[in-house]
Length: 94
Image (tube, rainbow, N blue to C red; front, side, top):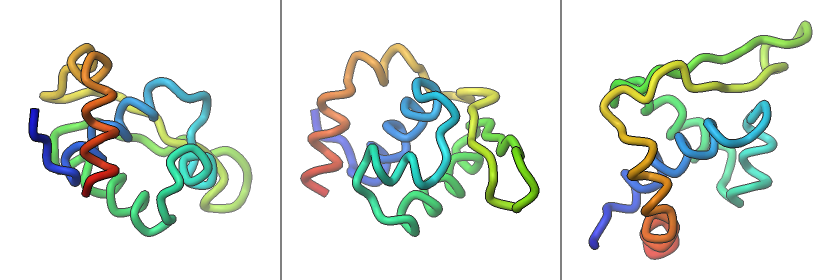
């Protein structure tokens, strides 16, 4: 299956947001190895795909908190789970 690396990165990030405890940008950088700017761009793109994304504020600084999905929108989380290896391969090739 040929999957666009940009789209694969978005799907994989949704999966991470759903499966990690309190995922914030530093934690996601550690897990994925992606640069901060890449993660911020992908997070910014998710609502444009119909995905419900919320930032849960914790603490006094603006960036103290974590992200969570409020809706998968048109995405199928079971499909993403079943194809996680292909998604990761597409990201690595991209």
